Image 1 (cartoon, rainbow, N blue to C red):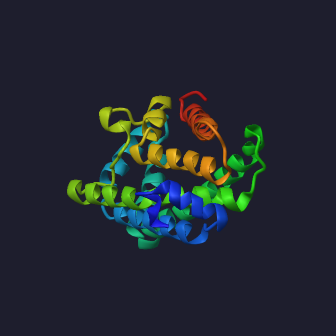
Image 2: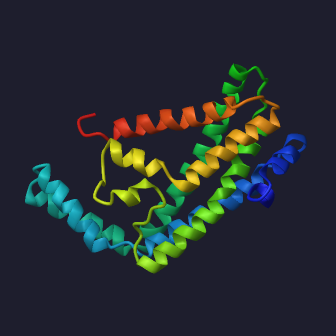
Length: 224
């Protein structure tokens, strides 16, 4: 299974005969949740409150409304379960949904490439490629600890730290070294497992990524 890092083609060849998805999914979930828990320990809640108040003032909220919202934020940040448990649960649910959604989309796209889909095989490709979460989590954890900050990135946002919101922020945030590595592995996995010739699987994988990026970017754009 961990051959996905050094010999991914051989790993996908084995998955072709015996799809394995549950264990790699669990490993990736644990790695990502570990980073989530670690990052919550380094959140600057004071800064978060200040930014939230500024946004509320920009929206024209009254002092009474801001005061009530501030009290709720303070209750949230002072409650260990709310501060750590909710982000952890949210991260877990989101990751599981994303994995199965992508496996479904890729699988129904395979007939476009002239092959018959097989959901379990596709799911095994997605989850094993998802093991990139391990090195990604390690790198992010190191950066979090060194910086003593929850605000870390391995994406192109590093080149534009002042861009926080909007379409460009979403685009730069999704051009991440580990994300690209994972997408390449998914394309390779589909190619090997389903005996697809050429580069068509990569077009499917990166096409889905581009479509999702545009949708998220538009949703994050003011006025949308």
